[in-house]
Amino acid sequence: MLLTLASRLVQFVLMFISVKVMTTVLPPAEYGKVALITAITAFFAFFLINPVGTFINRQLNTWHSAQVLRAAFCRYASYLLLVSAFALLLIAAADHLEIYALGQTLQLSVLVALTLLFATANQTLIPSLNILGQTRPFAWLTIATAVATLLAAWALTNFLGADAYLWLGGVVLGQTICAAAAWLVFARSKTLGWRTLEQTKPSTIFNTKQVLSFCGPVALSAGFVWLHMHGYRLVLGEYVSLVELGLFAAGYTLAIQIMAAVELILNTWFQPGFYRACDSNKAEERSAAWSTYATSIWFPSALAAAALFSGAPLFVQYMLGDSYQSTAQYVQFGALVEFCRILGGVTGLYFHQQKQTTGLVLPTAVGAVLAIGLIVYWVPLHGLSFALPALCAGGVLSFLLMYGRVLPVHRPTAKAVGMLVLVCTLAALVCVFLQAVHTQFPSAWALAWLVLWSAVGFVYLIKRFR
Image (tube, rainbow, N blue to C red):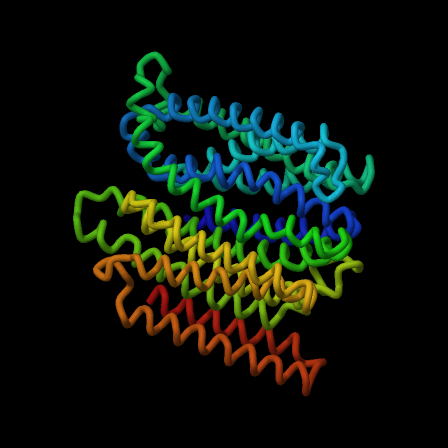
């Protein structure tokens, strides 16, 4: 586990370096293109891939016990090929829509298709190694993916031109290499049950009725999540330029990267235990699985969001290029949006555990509608800075509606919820204190931020593992 966490920390550092390199190499207009291309790719991923991915995570231990992993992954690879081909054809057919004047339809369609195929393979195979207890190859492949994507993207943009397509193409190239390596790890392992396809009936792996009943509501819910967290960028295209969108995306992406890195480390530590508890033979373990997991993720996420909010100018100064130094407010509100996303995402896993995924649809739909409605109303009146508060409002509403559907017996205890409220309140007070220090003693603010949050983190770890 220490090796696994070390690999996540290295990935954390490389992720920061990647953001710095990206905002140094790409001008804001090209970064705006990256944001739009990413949103288009996410459309297909959220609707057609993520629901099946959650089903795979839920079934992975069962398939491992039945020694049918190879058959399952081969069938999933066939599905990914179909999704990629569909995306390529649909984007090519929609050329006349001229989405935000991206142009280069052939490059766009091919890039999206390759990303859906190989990035998904990478993000399925490597985390599966961790869930199945193969921590050493998981750790090294995690680091290798971060290094390979950064080097390939930097090389293409440095030698061929500062272009959004070249950067994202380099990312896909690095992911492809490491996905192939992960496949070889599975194929050569003697403990993962890598059996031949002929020995396994397809219906025992992907029962069509079971997959559709689980993935159908998840797909619908994921579509609303895409609209909430990605589709709004296409809406913003009606109101702002590519340069403005690029600055906005850079600040928000920095917040996403930092919060995602924290979430990644937490999931690496706690998620395997959650999935094992979901399949436990003991009823009390199954009942407590989600509430234990939720409190383990929510508390440190609240602290991380507050630390990022209060230290946004510092992160922007050291982690973004010179053209992006005016984006601190986007980082701050982005931290709040991401915290809301984590609250909702963790709550959504309750419905995955219970295999009652229809409970996800209404909360995500209402949250997305509120967020997009507020963006359409606020941005023309008050400017781009109001886009993230709109997303935050939608995230809060979605979480509250989702949490209200969790059965009381499965919720965290009142004491745990009270502790979460207390943690959020204390974190807010720390932010207020640091803002006062920044106003009165600007030269000492960075040191005060570092010392104070280091102390908070140390106290949390002591209490968490005591």
